[in-house]
Image (cartoon, rainbow, N blue to C red; front, side):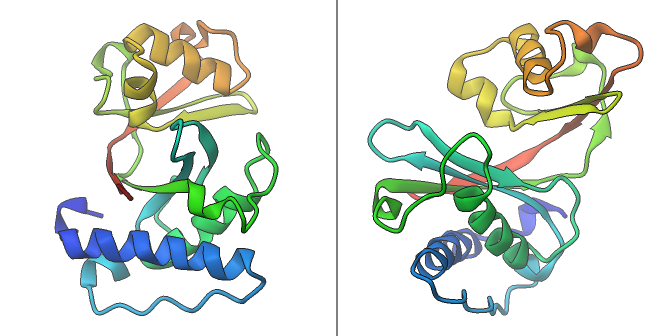
Length: 185
C-alpha cells in the first residue's frame, strides 16, 4: 500500500474505528463491521495497533501483521482486539482502563531485505529471523527509547530471543519496512 494515499480524515476515521471496536468488544458486544467510502482504507495494508497508558506512555499492548492480507479498516479492527487481548506480555485490557489508554496505528510498507549499515533509525522498522526465531520492532521503538542503530539491532535480536549480535551472523535474515504512524492526541 502507498500510505501517502491516506488523508487526515482517513487517519482520524481509523483511530475512531479502533476505539469504537475496543469499546464494543470489551463491553461484550460484537464489534460493528467497518464501513468506508475511502479507497485508501479499503486497500490491503499490514498494520499494527499499539496501546499506551496516557499518563506515562508505558506500553500496554501491541499486535500487528507484517503482510497486507486485509483491507486497512479490517486489519485495524482485528489488531485492535489482538493488542487488547492477545499480547502475551500483558494481561487482557479491561473496559475500565480503556479511557486511560491511547491508541496508535502503524500502516506498514512491504518487508524488504536490508543490510545492517543501511538501517536508518526512525525511518526503518526491522524484522529478524534465524532458524525458528524471529522478532520485529516498529520504527518508533528506536526513537522512543533513544537507541542508535547498533542498539536497535541488538534489541531486535533480544526481542527474537537471539543473542544480541545475531544480526551479524550470515544465516540471519534482516528485513526492513517503513510505517506511517498516527494516533490519538
